[in-house]
Amino acid sequence: MTATTLTPSATTPNAPTQSTPTLSPATLPGLRGRARVLRDLRRDGIRASIRRRPVGVDTGDFVLAEPLGAGRWLLGVGDAMGRGDTAANVASEVRTYLRSHASRTHSLAELMRGANRFVHTLTDGERFVALLLMVLDAPRQTIRLANAGQNEPLAVGRFGGVIALEGHGPALGLLPDVEYREAGPLRLPPGVLLLATTDGVTDALDADASIFGRTGASAALAAARDDGPRGVVRRLLDDVEAHSATPLLDAASALCVRFSH
Image (cartoon, rainbow, N blue to C red):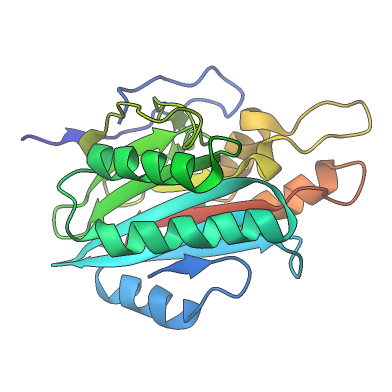
């Protein structure tokens, strides 16, 4: 299958975003072996940065980074409903499921379907998990995506244009049987950065009860694009905290990636 090249145009961050076709076990905080995971990603030609604020509290936010071999990685950003021990435990169970099934599942859509049934059974349909999954293929510089109720990932090009990769499918666990679709392969040219976030980023409220939203995330991504994934994530979370009228009530997690060559 021929990959579609992802080329964000030079638009302003506040302009309407262009809609595209749907397209390591690791957790935050305490990303196990984070330095090793990031080093292994770099070795395979993928630059990544992962951060969450605030730290030191139980949360349903989690990040996956699972090697699939031959320079391919499964990356994911998830958010289990709620806060505290229950959310953290559900997140842990979902990570374990994804890790154990990733290498023997033929497609992201199939992996999502299985994870949805798992969450529905685990929680008796009383909780949900928002999840974005991506397979990054460094040798081919392509990505595949599937989205279950998570924020749409954003991509920025060399000239600052930002587009949203719109996804399909409800959050995991709401219904026992859901058909998910995956998008791709999409080619990610050198210099294009991809940003994935949880709703703690976009739902942050200022003193006037205005959300940070996709607009705020797009502006941060465009402003820090020349600073690479680490600079983007740091700028984004600094902007979220500056926007928020109170200390963050929900975890704000972000993953930014690009191919290094």
